Image (cartoon, rainbow, N blue to C red; front, side, top):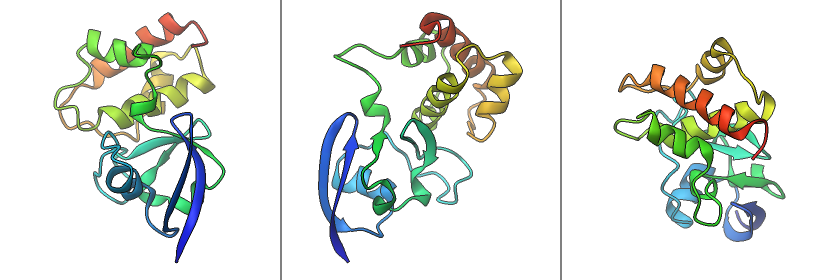
Length: 158
């Protein structure tokens, strides 16, 4: 059923008329043109489709657009502010924590949610917090270093 769904997307009020049972991933990519959110497994295992919903990392392949009615959604496109990369984005570049880049948006948003909950994570905290995001390129050690560097730069806030 076509309905108007209202939510905040990357800080902006958004209203879209769409089948409200449509998967959020496809609404973001196809209807709204935000292709940073990737389709991976479609089963909530890989994390490529991760977005933030009210600052919680969630798999957009398992959410309908109706699930975000009245909520705040952030995609990787909304992380940079005023043309300035977020410390996580900078750290991933500086530590070469991306190779093919396909998983990177979901990993960065998962790291963002982790740092919101734990601004000073230990290495085991980072490994545990990032464990459900898959990177097939093998950049895991560099990802951990990038998250640590971003946490240091952010010093508990951004």
